Image (cartoon, rainbow, N blue to C red):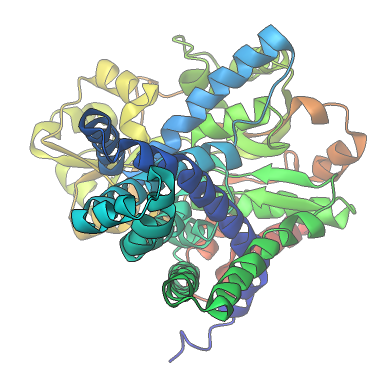
Length: 519
């Protein structure tokens, strides 16, 4: 019962106009584009076996691809294309968010429309088409007046299926920068806010059911020739389409977009930055749940304005620097490297969030494991877990090279779930984060990187090229620089993974600002 009266429901409801409006916009655009492409292709292919097999084969292959992978693949492709068009023709476009989402979802919508249109038309009794021809109808007249009306129930079933698929898959567009109902789900998973997860799932399901019933009403009206049914269905879809204008009408052109990666600390810091900007009368919105490479490219291309990154991540993962350097030297060279890309390193927040190999302290003490060198002798009998990025990052390669690590089993999981997994013995070691409050909560210890394989990870504030000379933005963020130490950040992260209204990133961000001011 406590979940039903949780005040976080009202917080979730406050985000609904923005999230729902953007979700409907991308879904309707993709579905419309999918119909415009698929329906003529189905008509052209219905009597051409080779073309029919090719189209259905292609659409089937697309359908077997995981939705998140398909969405993610379009981002680098469009980013490369945008760079080329800008260099060759002086005209660029944003490869962030809306466009890659629409194109991926369009491909996802094609199979049910193609298959059902072709199946519906091929299932018509040949005697009926012969009768139409015998009555003097042309092939086009026969198609429009006889075949399509008879095939309509099957065709509409395909369109309805495509609509439900698109609306469901659109929740996965959050990691490439498209605001959607998936923002609830991704944020909820990262911060263990199950109210947000549940709200996002319910909202997406209700939207899919509403659209499905509106399409069913249109199908019914066309079949029984009742204009009122068709009109109500079209009016309902028009109202949904009009709702997509709400986010753009309520957002000013000067809104600052704050980016955030895929873990709790990033949600808290993005909320903190937004809090400071709004206090300085600078409208702000967030784009959360972005991957490390996606968020950096988005900043470099002015698709977002500001976010917090980590010096070691940029040094090793973004710029692929092989040599580890002392902290200040690394920061100095990193600042110069970023400047060559017109990106401003505004300053450090005051803490590091480095990767570290973590174990339960009691077990580490029992085995005499205090450093990664000690761990290497036991690794062959142990399992390790990391987040979705870690094992593909240069840091993992550097650790293996420096220590000769070879674990019995390697697993990937949601970052917050790793800590509970290692504490319960599901895995033996995790690649965690040194600023995570869950280290203390679960009684873990960070193993010493005695061979210095991992670089320093200062939390740094980055500004997009178009914001480099924004004095008001700089002034709003200046009070944060150098003010957040590791102990305070760990406490903030721990608060954000709690259960209750005071665990939301916005609430924790306000606590964090108050704590900073007390010092």
